[in-house]
Image (tube, rainbow over all chains, first blue to last red; front, side, top):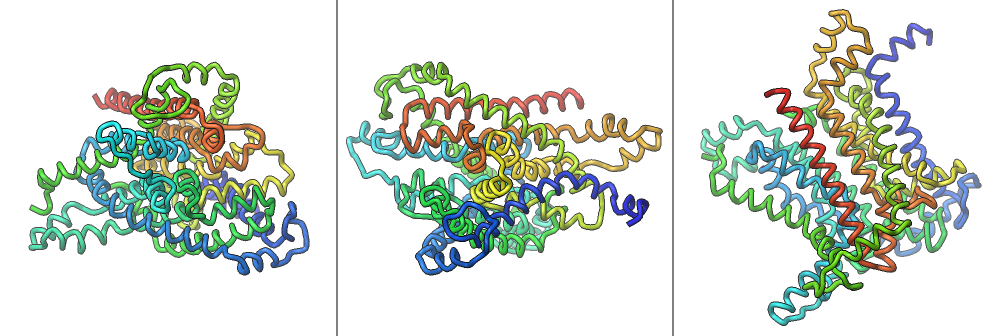
Length: 287
Length: 267
């Protein structure tokens, strides 16, 4: 390309995008390729520069790793469903009802994002543990001592709902704020009842934000590990736990890499299929 | 009446918001309660209160080192990510160019990705390059995830920015540097400031990326996790509470400053 052509190709937009794209190339794309390369290395080796083979994948399919995959996908799905139900009324409030207070409420709800999830989950241990805040109060007031609910699969889901709530809430709020008030009023004037307005006007118009919220929550929840470990007491073993074990205790990096590749395939396929259909300009531009 | 939200409905929505806020903050409150206990083990109702664990925690040289490492990483991440994200956001929303819609989706990919897996991937990549893990590799790891988030935060501000302002300044004879300093930056500063807050706080609270990429250096969340798993002392809720309150002060203080400045400008 001649200098002039190069200059024309290098328009302002591309020029401004360059630092970010360089970061993503070196910090995101390259590491993913490193994982893929590692997954084909012989088991228990520590360098990707070797004769590739499929041993790790054979090991995975021969053993019971599918159980961890199933657990992770199931937990993530349940989390998404619960969160969608919990967050919709709040997103509606933030977008349509709370008015000038919406920003203050948003700040209050966003703060937990900045505290590491381990720490916040640990607070739940203090709450639910024997002689903790809940059971201690019951014992003190009523003299009863029920069993603690900690360290069960249900607690794992509770923890995931807790940790991922903001990731569902904020995209959903953007979605609900895309619903024009006039459209809702018009539907009501034309005789639609509340339920009809919700199903036929509000929900479809808010759908892009809702889907992005569900997708983000699902993807992050599939990669969840802290909830099962800290308050689930390892009653459930999610896939990232297996990956971590491979990298730490069993010192089998290539096996861990192969598991990570399979997880990335699931997540990547889902994200690419869903995101392709969206016009991000429309979602992020606030009315 | 469907278009207008009724009073009863409003009250219900507020009650729901309050319930969720309590749900979000309950563990933090439990941690704060535990931090003010005087005994080695947590009991509720707390038998005797005291600040002894605060004293022990803040006289510890180990804790000072942790805070220093965490702050260093968070500062570096804030500065670098806001510069990259500022230009990234202009490319995202201000300029129209071929390839923009693909770019917009590429930016989102690191956000839509399990962080623990990203941390591991970066560990493998640094290892393949023969790099030694330290706070510097952790800064890089944080950037991969935080720059896209900050880009989105600034982007929302850029959407409300009228490019005609820049063009008018050029027409009046301003050069590129003057336009940036006198027009673009002042108009976008609330977004940039929000971006700074997000970058700092997300780095400060990050665990999954730090876990794999800090090497011998340790951040506050890593230390807390190690102590939770083995060797709990009330120092854990103490440090946790201080870290949470610090994050809260930065967040609310930061937005209070924005609010005051904005009121002064319009008033």
